[in-house]
Image (cartoon, rainbow, N blue to C red; front, side, top):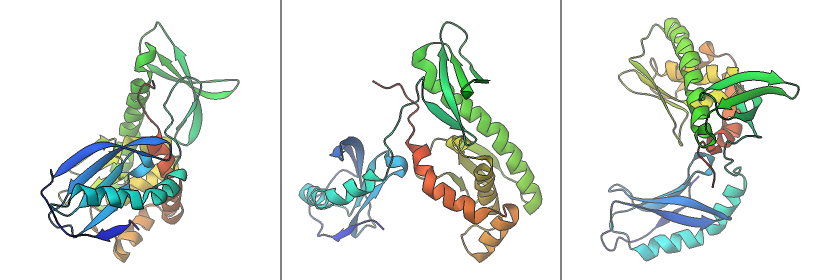
Amino acid sequence: MPFVLHSPRLKKRPPVEERLHEVAGRSLPLKIVENQRARRLTLRIDSGGRGLRITIPPGLARREVERFLSNHQGWLEQRLAKVPLRPHVRPGIKLPVRGVPHLIVHHAGTRGTVEVSRDNSGPILIVHGDRQHLPRRLADFLKREAKREINRLVEKHTATVRRRAKSVRFKDTSSRWGSCTADGGLSFSWRIMMAPPEIINYLVAHEVAHLKEMNHGPKFWKLCTQLCPDTERCRDWLKRNGGALQAIVFEMSE
């Protein structure tokens, strides 16, 4: 549960303010968001420890925000200690694909593609082309894999529930793995392709179930379990391990 603090409204502030905040040896993006309906301050850590977000009542004085942050610095440090550091994808580390760790190998001087192969050490991802483009090429590779696998699963599960998805989109979201809009639009984080196949199937089953049940009530979970009998275990796996997948950085390190 987020910490909350009731405070008086004072002077006008910009609706959104962004800056860096130093905590637990990390420099994290901090977003301060003014919400007209807020009556207290709330502090949240983005999935994977990507950043911090404070929602505040309109007109709250800056000193109240700073005091709130200072009072909960210890809480932030404790929570962030449980979040893995954000590793950058680079040659020599292993990146999971469908739950299986693949060693990243860079081959310069050839066309910029990603090749799945195997050597004496096990599965490998050979990334061709300039070194600076390696993170993006791996992200693009996961996106292509996600489109192929998830579209297949969407077709399978929508046929079962006899509902049609208006669209299927792929994003890199930090707060959720998937979503379903009221008009039937499905969205998925392509990062789910780093999870085991049964977790990917659960995520798709979860969102497809929303095409019929736009809630998380008993009928929804019953339908979700019909589509994915291992729903409970897969849901727990994603809660325990999803943060580590969200923490991986697909950008060039300094």
